[in-house]
Length: 473
Image 1 (cartoon, helix red, strand yellow):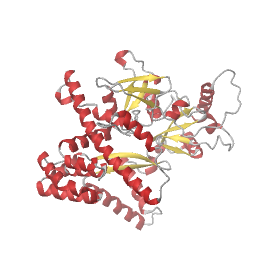
Image 2 (image 1 turned 120 degrees about the vertical axis):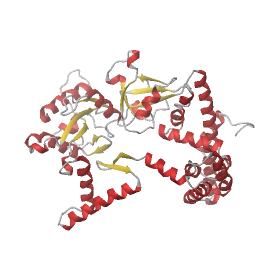
Image 3 (image 1 turned 60 degrees about the horizontal axis):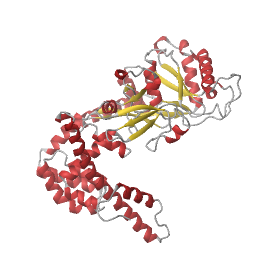
Image 4 (image 1 turned 45 degrees about the vertical axis):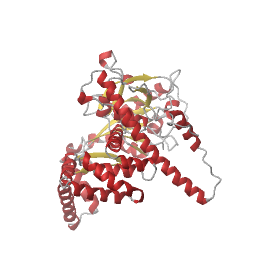
């Protein structure tokens, strides 16, 4: 399949196509051999990617140096380009670049084992991670001693052996690792199924144990006095109450970005349209649950004064055909900046393909300095890192109205006529397409006949939107 000499991109593409028709007319022993060979292919490919990534990094730094970029800023954006090429997040792209640099320049024996397909990219990553605080000379020693053993080692064995060698060579390295971990302390949030969320604190061990012990002691005392809640429920409620200062966990003022079509929200009967799912930020919930939120918001006026601000409702409308965001309520209580909120709700996550980080910046696709208007069609939600990368030399973003190419992570949405697609061009001229995902995962059934003259689907939604305002405002 491959010609003599270095493997070309065309040959790699042909090899990928050939893997789609791997020989299946073999016995079980042959199938196991195929699985083992394919695993070696993955390792060899990871090693090749590492070498190419280092070459790419060096070349980009030379280009940036020729363009007058200061030495301390050279290499900016390289990780983001690698991430796009590997269909991964920019954060992971930077880590992969660091892994490649360590393997090629400091741990060549480990790279050779990976290139032969005798270990995995993840085990190579563990080895690089566990030696990150060592000097280059000490890393070379670990590489020479541990690389020959990698083919027979598990993930845990690699981790333990690398840590032991690191401590042997440099007893102060564990302390530096601890200091680095403390500097990385943070709190993160991720959506969970069934309209729940996971809030995670990455803390020094003493602080983490103190937090857990305090919640556990409080829960034990409450349960001992007859509290009907379980221990876990008491701990979860106390966690919310102590962090927010609220007297009751469910009194926390929240903003609900409620996304529904007109039929799912306003239909008076349990038709399939009424049972359609509705969207909350990061989650899809049953329409019945969403209607209850609307009802709760409408009853705020009769609630006790100290609890009236518990729910803030922002109503958003999705197209009944492709699930894309059409319009939103401009009369939200307690917050302004409706345009920014629309961009956040439409993006759901950072619009850079495969990023997945939370939206932090409302960005002009065409920069304001270049005359770009401050409108929804010229806006996108990005994380801070991707917004900064977008401003680097050689990067460009444009609003697309044509069919996205194969780089789009949401080709189905684009084909359905999604109203907002952005074309991202990297310094090497590669193009990637970011199509705003549907805010509703389900597609509604055909619309019921309503007298709307020549008005289109969006006009119908606008009419239903104002009807909703009259019911819930």
